[in-house]
Length: 225
Image (cartoon, rainbow, N blue to C red):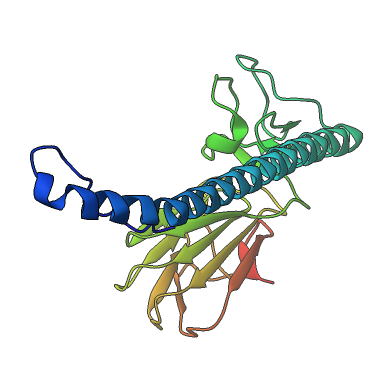
């Protein structure tokens, strides 16, 4: 808060104005003291409010951390109760084995034979989200993407974009493609498998549609859901 400046103080080097300046300074001091006291009160009030808000923020942060811990524990318990053991780094897995990720607590299914040290959530080449899990959203800012199982691609690039289906799907695998670039010529590439029984790529001609495909194997290949 602003304070009124004090008048020029008296000085012995200016005896002609000494008395007038002394009187003026003395007259201004009571007002100065009142303003200084008000300033102190204001500062103390703001300090108390800051301490209170800091305490509230600390409490909220602790509550948020506790909620996150609880949510992670619940997700871990849910994954374990679903019959999927935890993924272990360096272990070799067979195609089709399911494990839950210590990072996301979601359940993933092995797509290739092998091991590795990369968590399933960051290894879409070898792991896909297991059936019944929420799809993994992929924001595609380029003009092409190769999907992993249970991924949902959102096409953002203004140019025609291509979403390529997984190379080695299993029966029941699913993928989603959503055009968000306002185009009616985006493409879903079949990647060696049929789509709706045809050996042809699919063009998404509806700019407002989300295309969901499920793999049925055999001649039919991928089908619209």
